Amino acid sequence: MLTLAFSTILISLVACSATKTQESTGQYVDDSVLTVKAKSAIFNEPTLKSAEINVETFKGEVQLSGFVSSIEQTKKAVEVIKGITGVKAVKNDMRVKGSNNPLYK
Image (tube, rainbow, N blue to C red; front, top):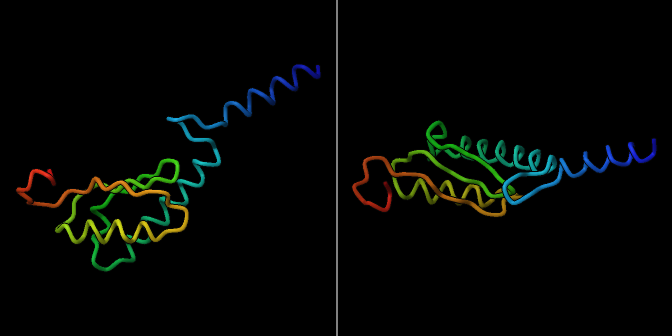
């Protein structure tokens, strides 16, 4: 009976542990909180159109995607997110609307 209980606990702990491609339960909760903070920060920044910027977080790295009107807005969004406690890195995948520059397609 003790072996069964120990095995159940061990399997539960392994199932909640993180791998390179999967978050632990705690990391998932932490990332959810960071995502909410990032979305709020973008929403509260008057120079950004929050409806057009998507936010995803994985293991403390925030990924920004979507469309903005200028390169300055991409820089501002990244700056705002970097200022959030707990953010380890910011990945900028935002695109500038109407830009003919191949770097922004």
